[in-house]
Image (tube, rainbow, N blue to C red):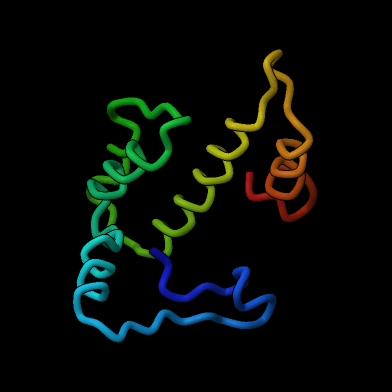
Length: 117
């Protein structure tokens, strides 16, 4: 559950909607269902395998991170890039060709001077 929604259907662009609980039970349920932050490279490995079902990870793909100091900013960058790859993987038609949305997803992160990939 997202707690703050930066451009949702209720708030609109440039506004934020904030959940407000009046009863303890719904608040406790929301807190318990909230995804825990990733706090180690091992947790990143586990989270990626669950979160990005469209992607394949080798058994040892996160091994090079062992011994490297954990960095939350790096985790955010990994998750952002893997999300792009996962969404792109899901945007193919029956023949394997990229869909219109797939081309849109591909355009910014893969092309131009500021391409992430």
